Image 1 (cartoon, rainbow, N blue to C red):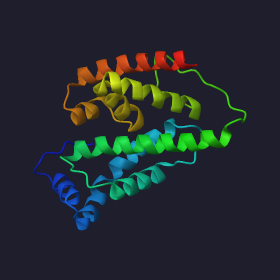
Image 2: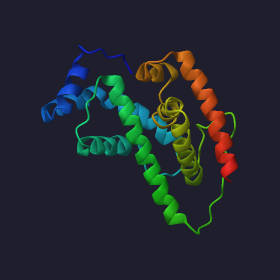
Image 3: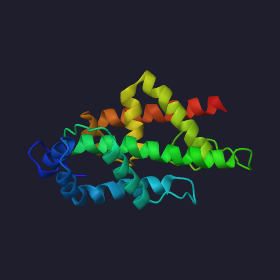
Amino acid sequence: MAADTKETPVTQLLQAWSRGDRAAFDQLVPLIHNDLRRLARQRAQALVPGASMQATALVNEAYLRLVDANPIEFRDRAHFFAISATVMRQIIIDQARARSRDKRGGDWQRVELDYAEIAAVSDDETLLALDEALRRLTAMDARKAKVVELRFFAGMTNPEVAEVLSISTDTVKRDWTFAKLWLAREIKGAE
């Protein structure tokens, strides 16, 4: 994901779209689509094996939700991807909840979350537990929760997260390390 300043066409198109210019959105999609697909593909690979949500479907659903949302004032490309990460997280969680409802009373197995790495979540129940723990982390430290959201749900790298949140890469690393351990403890304690 390339950096974007106030003067770039992507930022200008995002701002025009924020003001309701539908033509700006049509021009914007080809410019951001590959980055969104890359992020979605990374997330789709980390989801439950056999999950119905493919990268293209995740991007398309994110577009639909963004278009249908109340007007959002996008400051720049980084802000757009931060909001997209939140939208992708909600789509992923909604799908996990739907599958979990379908399975309720079924034959599911709980998979414990490894303390060292949360990025390998592989079942809906653990994904939902992660979402609940992430809500608690947000109440405690919103920036650390946003780091998790951008790293885990949007698949961003540390430098990309640093750019989006306007913090240093070292701060992202510290927040990510803390958040992984804290979330793993919270999820383990909830079992």
